[in-house]
Amino acid sequence: MKIIIVLVSLSLAGCSSLLYYPTRYKYVDVELLKHKPEELVFHEDVDKNEKLVGWYFKSARKNPNEKPKGLIVLFHGNAQNISAHFTSLFWILDDGYDFFIFDYPGYGASYGEPNPKNTKESGEIAIEYARKKWPEVPLVVFGQSLGGAISLRSVMDLRDRSRICAHVVESTFHSYKKVGQEAMAASWLTWLFQPVAHVVLSDEYAPKGRISEISPIPLLVVHRKNDPVVPAFLGEKVYEEAKNPKQLLLVEGEGHIDAFTGVDRVPNRKILLDFFEKSIKTCPVHNKQ
Image (cartoon, rainbow, N blue to C red; front, top):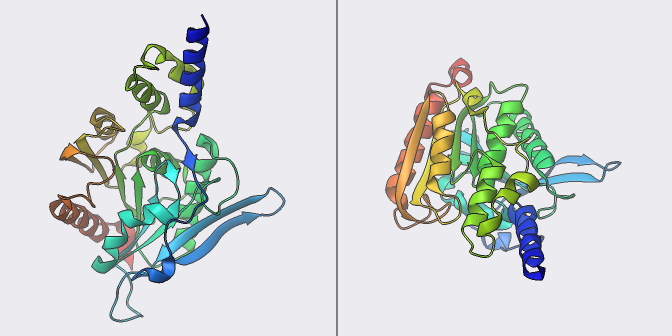
């Protein structure tokens, strides 16, 4: 009986900590970077002890007055903070795209404790901030792993989505309950207690059942076929629930959120850049400018 109690306790702890692994540690000295970020406090409410912080990276442009091809709002995964995750898109700065990466509550310099509700709300605030601060630049939303699920739901709940020209999700999922179940199934210690994930985790703020609402924003779903963290069938489920225009990129091999930084990155980057170019070119807001 004691063993069962211990196992159940571990499974419950595994579910509750599955979604968020925030750190405050700064993983890079920005002064050593080729492209240095501008740190921005994009939301602050002293009375509620709320503060959200992000980094803005400006692309390499010969003419400082030249507009970027687009601005990417990057939703990172469930561990560490922006000082580790910015590397996912650092390469794209040489292709004329700016990007803005932000931390959820409890990550990096952002205040609070992360949960499905406030991470989703921070995503809405980040997109709205980008829309107002860079009003003449086409917006692209890019979410990785947990950030993919958050980004989908954030876009769904936005009052004004007219400035968003494209949406990309990599190694993501549609349901917190389902990804929790899969994580528990991966360990012999918690395999028997997979149903606990359906009790502990809630899909109230998950994108499940509403992904079709992303349309008509073009959606690119990216997933490695042998993703050891988030199984590929969960990404395929996102694609299946989406409406056109949509595109699925299933990448060979094993890995998690490394389609654009791994050994096979060159062809995958071309697909991504082609998707951006096509989506922005046909974006109604872009064509009005």
